[in-house]
Image 1 (cartoon, one colour):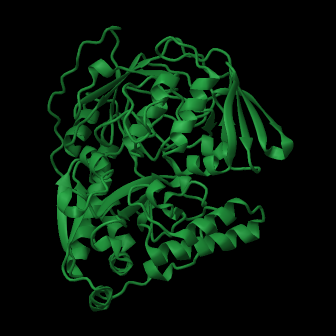
Image 2: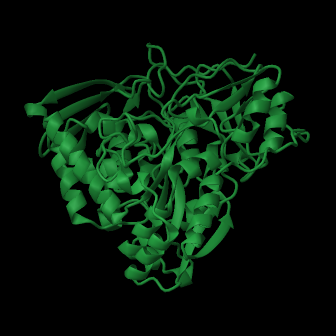
Image 3: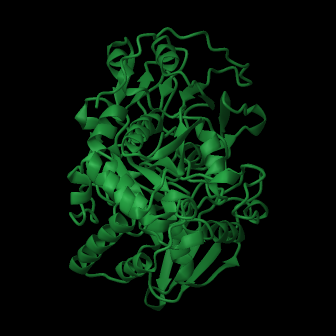
Length: 523
């Protein structure tokens, strides 16, 4: 299935710039969508992750090779056979409101995060006590050793961001009242205009680590005074604005426009995130037809990942990998269990027979279609078409991504504003084994939106976490993947690697798991 026809229009309308207090032009960045919230615990939205990584820091960063590295920490002392870890905060950490970062801020922030995030919940289940010993020292006392602790604490999405204790006291199922971190940028809340602009200023009091920056780890040295996110929903307008120098950097240009951008004078195009995203469709296990495993299995059978990725990313096969399993290709967890379900396409009559056997009788399925997100728009456009072809009654609700982020939190039935399915893209680097992969959780009310409950899946994951033998871990990954496919915790649609585009107005951005604004200078 080919992508929709090339968008010919490339001329950009004039983009008004607000006055800049410093008298210097900001770095103007076009994000993949509107920034709805600055709370990286409340949501897993990629746009929020990208903004949060500018404003907040974490105890551990993640380098370019995906290894956890000390970031806010000066050192870690491990005792009692790995069950007691004493972590010391480095000197000079200060929040944007002028208050020093204290160990009790870190403890409160981590406890809030552990109530929402799957990796955090894993730590919590193994935790005896987490406490602040003094102003710079926090102590983890574990029930048993947990080798995955640094990796979990370096998460890049739904990040364990450290914020002031008073803010971290916010109910994790409610949004924080203000965005105060200790990172290299300050969030300028008064300049935020939803659907138009978000502004970040260099944190002049930030003291970088001595080593070079690598992804979200190391010395995060900011070389610009301000970064202005400009939301431009029309892809052709943003591409034209880049070519004319009105904007400096587009996070994810429409794939159809990449040939034009590659030919534009002074414009560079390249993949900055070499791991990319793991695309999925997430079903709701609580209400409606998708609560029926037979219906979920039929929906999985209807999806052709190659068709979806081609429609989403175009014909350049270097920008996607499909079909994929529960763990991304080439990762430690990748395996062949159940892959026949996504490699061998069933016929429409066969899938209709599956729906009949499941007892489906034309009930409505509410499918969110985020029209302002390039990749999710392509994913849902194809998925909705094939779902209708197999006889599903699809209520395709075209909304902006911000609305999806808000509405997917609802556990209400469909007739009261609930939903059946939405698209999502996880950082592929977090989907390499069962530790942080969202789709392998079956912990019900504590699970990510969709709330699957599957005790067997939870038991398999727990066994994997406690196993150190690589051969046994591989066997468990196979069992986990087979179970995820059988119960359809989600529907994988492919791994995609969006290209970014930037102009001659800035130096080349660093490669990493998200747009990295440190180390980039305005030319």
